[in-house]
Image (cartoon, rainbow, N blue to C red; front, top):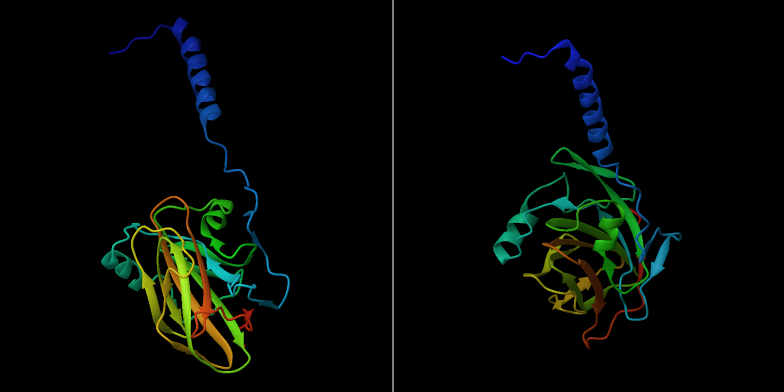
Length: 233
């Protein structure tokens, strides 16, 4: 049995207070607000033409979903086939809307990129979100003045990614890879007059992560006469 004399009680109390003070002082402060992503801005116009090289520079991005980060074909397929939120392969989101994934509320963000690619690491880091072992959903819409046949979606991503055009899966690239322009090219597809929806799921295991996308014609030249319009109309 521990037997403390009355003389020790005040000293023990002081020690307890001191230890408590040390504990409080050792607590991590809340994460400070981080600077905005240096390559991403909030859209300020209704439409945005593709750039001179045809790259799509306006997207709606969902905050990252935590996944295993495995990049084999089967693991990527399993991660993408899982349903995380309702209508994930058909929803046309707006910036500020949210979904709930595994009891975590995640927001969609409309962004313009100042580069040919969309830097997902910048996107997640600026939001104090994880950048490794994550899956990003990205959606955009292009407004096409007339039907365009025999065009192809050309993409690159870090790391694996799967892509859909108007609800149809058109291309996937797998493994731990860097973003290379036109790294993956779809079969020939048709863009219908009006709005066409492009959707991507990008999985990153660690380090940098980004993607790029554009359409090319039958001569492998980029399509430049199209515009991005994120509306649902």
